[in-house]
Length: 225
Image (cartoon, rainbow, N blue to C red):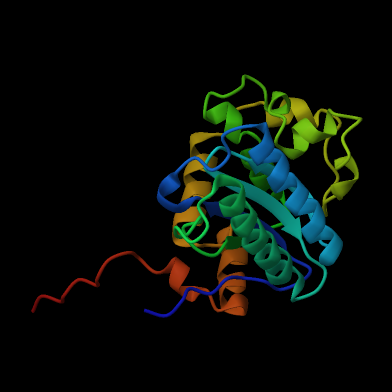
């Protein structure tokens, strides 16, 4: 089976995710989280990219990225995941024991309208949905937690996005997503599908060669004569 395409054109906002192999916990303590954030900073220094939001969870992480050039996304994420994998195994004495991640990162273009806000909220509300905190900004390993820490060395890492955020952004973030939005987002992740309105979606999947993400699952039914 051919390797699935990963969108990586510049000038597009992406929702990016990567999960640990077998969904094992790879961020167990503060040192694990700090090591990954350090790798993010180093990756950004090597291949600058606009980081709008991110959230590191115990067994996976999300980012909202806005690359300028076509090669930026793949270069940034490729170095980040490779470096983090090598360092994690070295720090945990498991070098040569197997894969840290399920595979390469997954990236999904996002329409820059209300869908953009929905994705950003979804990313930073992960700890709330998981029951780890009661408000998104209380999770220190995310962009909203980072913004609350004025003394953080990585506070300057984040960029503004293509749309201005409301003044009451934190209140918006802490409002639960609708069932419809959650279902659409999860389908985007499961199918590797861009996230947006259908007219936009049809155009983008054609531009990116991702038409298969719109096809119904399963084998086509046999015609009955």
